[in-house]
Image (cartoon, rainbow, N blue to C red; front, side, top):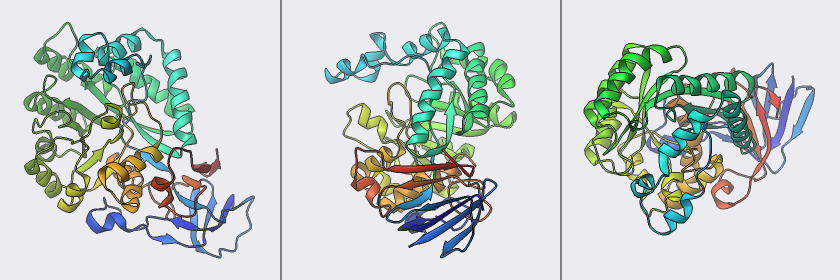
Length: 402
């Protein structure tokens, strides 16, 4: 073997059906005490107790937790500039829309990203990916959306493609041209541009098509037009849904067959029930209300009871700047009342399902990609319990120690 990990206090495998976990199944981690993992040629070849293999590298995980690498299914990792100046505005009570009017918000990031060269975007994004990896994330989704023009959106997607080829992180790209409305257009004009100019050109660069369906941005009808057009060029729908107000985004996600609906802070019960019926994954982003100093978080307990498979993600962007899925698990437990086991499932296997990578990653099973993290804690419950530090001891990506 290339690597043998032995004596793990808790080996969290998440072995089970290869479908998104719901209800009580979100709490079933299929853990092994004093577990071992054998890795060869980038793959997991055996899991159990007291495995007897010789290996080039033997890791004694006594007192530690071994689990799948975190999967972050909602990020905006490629952007230029930062918006730390907005914090003073937030502390004065200004809303997101008020900050936007004062020169902050998404248009500031769009301007900085448009000005940046591909090399500069790669440099800044690589630093973020390195941070993510050091905190145990081994696969992430990355959205465009800070270009808002054909050339700039393509530039972002090409940067993501290059990062995927040169960085250890596996990056799954999503087209989010419909992130905001450019200042020189109205919404319908921009929707036409997305459908007729952008979508044909991004085909082959991305797997998913996403829309920010929100009051003052893209309404349900416009969002549906874009997502239907995306389906025609082979892109699976995703949706930013019901983050600020209930627009009916959750119901649209169910209607259109989206793989996921993300945010869902204000989603109506009717839409949530429709998501459950259609098996749409709810990707919850507790870092966003935390960074906005809001008191309201997504209704995770209600969603679990309805049978919605939940995933967790960072929403890494200049308005919610965190690369740590450990922190997101902590918020999920402490603010949304998810159990540690549910949060771990949501940050690994269900997260992999939300970007259609569950055949490869998200659980520790024979034949899967050897993406693992070893944590300096004796069980998974310590992840939300011991907060404010990085618990990662070792990251293994595709069978290589990082």
